[in-house]
Amino acid sequence: MSYQEFESQYLLKRKPVIITDAIDGWAAKKWTPEWFSEKYPDMRLQTDQGEISMKDFMRDITSTEIDSGPFLREKSIQELFPELMSHVQPTPVYVLPNWLTFNYPFRNFSGRLKRLSVIELNFTGKRIFPYLHIDFLQSFAFISQLYGDKHCVIFPPNQEKFIYRKGTENVSQIFDVENVDLDKYPLFTNAKPSYFVLHAGESVFMPTGWWHTTSVKGPSLATVYSVANSSNWNDVIKDLIRTSQQSPRTARILGYLVKNIGLIKSKFS
Image (cartoon, rainbow, N blue to C red; front, side, top):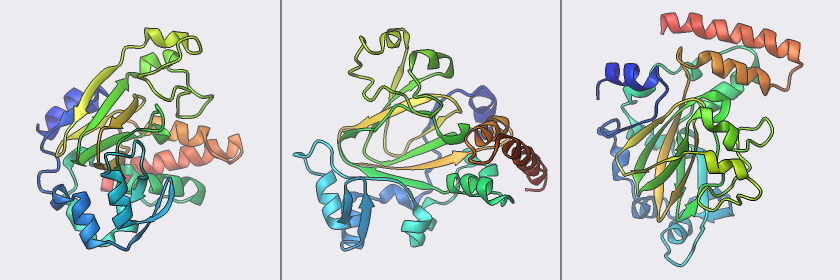
């Protein structure tokens, strides 16, 4: 798919799409549990189940006897494996431009935007993803599956009224969309999900506001780009202001400044 087709049919219309050739040039497509075990056997990892060596982590996530092993979740590749950054190059054209990578003033706001801009790594064994959610700060998500398959369930923004959002958070009260307590969440019967399987070598573009969750039946390795540009910048700034720890007035002023700095910087990038 050309970038022009992607932009006109999916980016601007905010429609999810699977792209089959976005990471064709990546050396990371050769990553496997065995590869990491051999290269970093004694490396210590901080997972959702505590600290563990790489070798033991890979043993657990490939085990057929463990239903929900450790999860190495949302880890920056640059921080964890800086020497492997060349393996996730070239940067897919579908995530460019990315205004999250700009340097902004105002540490409170810029730190949150920069944290989203890193390429994240998710490595796990068989499990259901922890929650049905939309992405932080109304960013776009570009998820690339490197190893294994990921079973995805998505809901468009106009079905949020059936999703039971947890207050103003970006998560739903519903944990498992395949086994919903309809006595507790009766409106969910009106929700119309779409299902697809993301295979190794494929990427999915998840637009702002789409609710999604995943499950994996075996070892799974994926990377995630969070993206902001002219297509969703207003939504990102609104959410940045809404979730700020600053006073409402200060947050609005800083948000206005960051919004315009992003617009100006984009003219020269």
